[in-house]
Amino acid sequence: MQKQVERLKRQDSVFWVVGLGSLLFALVTLLSLIIDMAMTGWPRISPAFFTSFASRFPEKAGIFSAWVGSLTVVFVTAALAIPLGVATGIYLEEYARKNWLTKIIEINILNLAGIPSITYGLMALGIFVYHFQLGQSIITAGLTLGLLILPIIIVTTREAIRTIPSHIREASYALGSTKWQTVWNHILPYSSGGILTGVVIALSRAIGETAPLLTVGALTFIAFLPTPPVMAEPPFVSFQWLMDPYTVMPIQMFNWVSRPQEEFHINAAAAGLVLLTMTLLLNATAIYIRYRFRRKYKW
Amino acid sequence: MKEGFSDPKSFKRRAREVKELLIKSILFCCAASSVLITFGVVWTLLKEALPFFQEVSFGQFLFDTEWTPLFEDPKYGIMTLVSGTLLTTFIALTVAIPLGTITAVFLSEYCSANVREILKPVLELLAAVPTVVYGYFALLFVTPLLQKIIPDLASFNALSAGLVMGVMIIPYVSSLTEDAMRAVPVYLREGSLALGASNFQTSFKVIVPSAFSGIASAYVLGISRALGETMVVAIAAGLQPRLSFNPLESTETLTAYIVQVSMGDLPQGSIGYKTIYVAGSVLLLFTLVFNLIGQRIRSRVEKKAK
Image 1 (cartoon, rainbow over the protein chains, first blue to last red):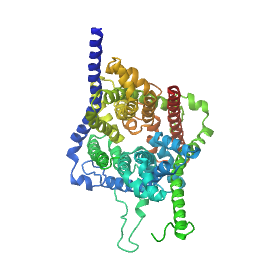
Image 2 (image 1 turned 135 degrees about the vertical axis):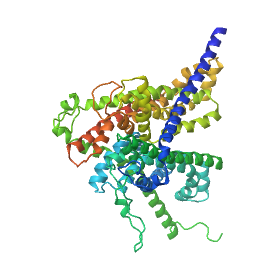
Image 3 (image 1 turned 30 degrees about the vertical axis):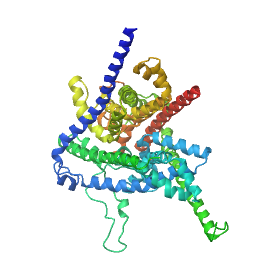
Image 4 (image 1 turned 120 degrees about the horizontal axis):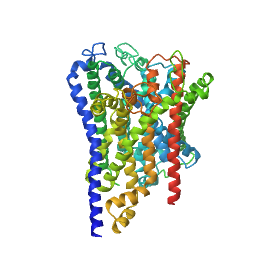
């Protein structure tokens, strides 16, 4: 008896060590990835690296068109995915009746979240590039990534709305508000923290996504910026940039990684460092938002 | 109050009702459009892939042992790409499932709430790293490291791509597993501990079996991530289709093939164009099958639990 208790206690402490070990293994891998990339890439990081275009000479090459491209593509992505995703989330949580149609939509969203990202790229190649003749443009890339992150935004919006207790809704109805007034004045403001967290995480995913953009043909040598959206003469605003070719950070990095020369690998590490900083900063922002809103509302 | 309730027939009230209805319809259209996306994916894949089978017979497709569609003498044995995909997925899962499960048990049953609050978001950062960065890491850090241990490891190989992919998937597995374990009612845990079971016995004989359906869906998510992962294998596993399960050699997965072909010029209707849709369809089929198995397991366990 005594022996068995001792054996079980030993087993427990052994597992404690094993558990901590496996957790640390994952964290050490992450850390060595960051350190390795920083050590290799840091020497190449300079103001010129951010303001030069891609080049055949590794020491002259930079990420100007890549980071501008990433920003413009993510802008289009956000403009598509945020309204569509939040609206879908609101509909499913607040409006939808429990019937077969709702069930189909729900199952469908679960499945969308599970299909590989590269299949979105194949769909975009068939539909946006060839069917709608949008070509290899910023708008194609933005729409593709927008559809890709849509399920993430829908799911987090629904989760955020679900945490609001029903007495808030009932109080609002009792004062005579309509459904939309309740949603607009109460549900959306109270769930905005959760929704924002989801949006930021989804956008960070979009910034780092490479595969679907490769299939729509983004791997090209781009040594210029898109057309500026504002002009000196009327009508002052131009949407020509939407149709311009582009490159983005992860594709620029992929391009450099897949070259055999060692010099370009240093560029890849530097681009990876910038990309990693961007996504980790966005994720830190998301954690911060979640933390702040959790303190703000207590039901 | 002079006015009292507004007249149901008043213009203002009618206008409000119309507005409510309009908003509801707009929201419904947004929700319904997500079904269109699935439809779009399946439709494009099938539409572009089906003409392929007018040129190539199913027998060739399934039983050829080479995949060289862009050569003079084309061969279309899809199993070469499938074997590459299964190999890298298998390696990734041998890392992700044990480590993910152990991590989840540790976070849920062994460590204090404060420690968990800090460690969990940090662990989830692993899922936030762009996959192209993992590809770089596998090719230029893990492979040279492994070559010191295994000298005849090729510089593009399935092993390091699979291992890195496995670490990448850990947070997907551990997060869902932990959620499932924490959803197990406290009285089961307390009952087991009150009977004198150790923490380890409680975790693996009570909590894990009761959370099984949630854990199964975590594994299924991990599998579909590994099947569909593209950049790590495209960068680090090489681009050589090979019907073998040797992890030390280079290989090519379905996803890596799609990337390889997409990097060249790809006119609509060309054989290269058709084959990437064929590869995409096979990939989608695999993911769907695994998702269905996951759903089946979940519903069977849930029925049993009732």
